Image (cartoon, rainbow, N blue to C red; front, side, top):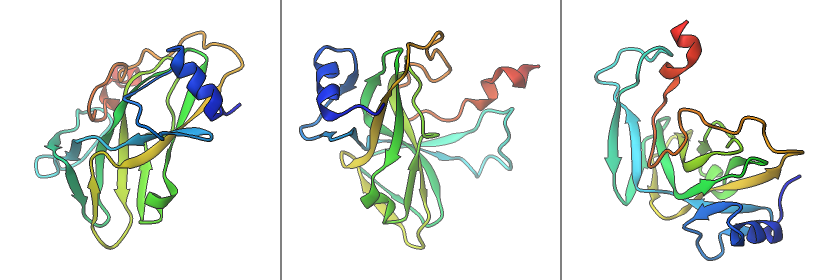
Length: 179
């Protein structure tokens, strides 16, 4: 069941769900808008020849009030908002339609697990043939919250728990990589 604005407001008032800072007008009929942070990561392709699942990826950090994404380029960004989901709630991260219509694809693997705490790292891809300039503080995506039939037996405690700012891939820490 997708949560309504009324339920979202009630849960946030009781601190059962945390989305902070919460901007005026961020709560939509069935979602919460999130805003672009000031912290970005770009793959450091001048020092790496290949990306693989078993090695740490090198990133170049960029901090600022705006960033321009070249055509057909990828970077990581973060939401300004810090979220805490209870053990019986999950969230989908959806790009805003107005942003998608510019040719900017926004994702975070599309899913926030129950029990997650942290800022959300976003994967941005410019599918357009023109550069796209983004400004920190602008609405970039929305969280759609879904109530689970019961609390998770094992809420999220993974390698991204508690992340702040933009966090690069930690796929090299996966347990199957060590087998």
